[in-house]
Length: 255
Image 1 (cartoon, rainbow, N blue to C red):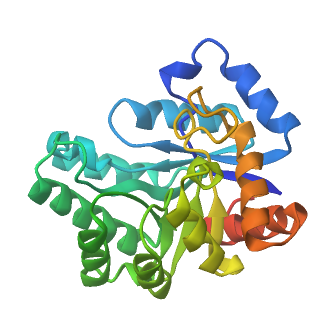
Image 2: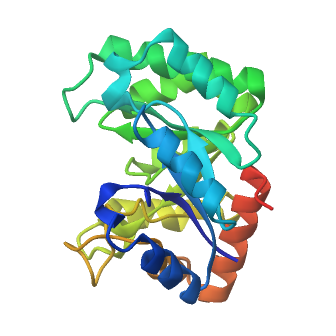
């Protein structure tokens, strides 16, 4: 079962042809897509997408870039939505030190609050991490995130960081960059991640894999990520599809 564990198909970039994008995913063998709602605008559209399409599930959370805009009732709203039958995780949450849109201390506080919520509700979390590896690991450890585990989305860190995340009960997910010729580190890390903790994703419409790099990404391209993972792991693609699909189902409770 080919599963895209991270997409943004509610993005306005798909407004003209969303139905066709989803049809192409189905034709490519994609059986499940987890769509991510991460602020006031995208959480409702993500839920609407999950309600409309049987194959689409939802994760809801508050993105670190938008942390400065989060209000206390937004956390209450996320908690209410967790009872939705197709909401499978809290995310994407985490830290982003690349874009200077929210102060670091605000990002960290919002991150901690959502980990605590996830622990209380027993939901896995989906982690966004950009240029914040040490703080991510430290906060996950301090907040006892290993109790719930989750996904390190589109992992870009070193093997040392990946190993710490694996030790805290997290799965490591890879996207389009593992197909890039110059992406040495993601390939080296993927080669070392145990198969039973490996996931694949697109992050559509972003991070489009080779040979479509530079164009809009879509969920059908998760098969290209699977092919790259199979080559790096030196197994056949059917095994990668089966294992990553099983991992996704077991972690997120996809039906």
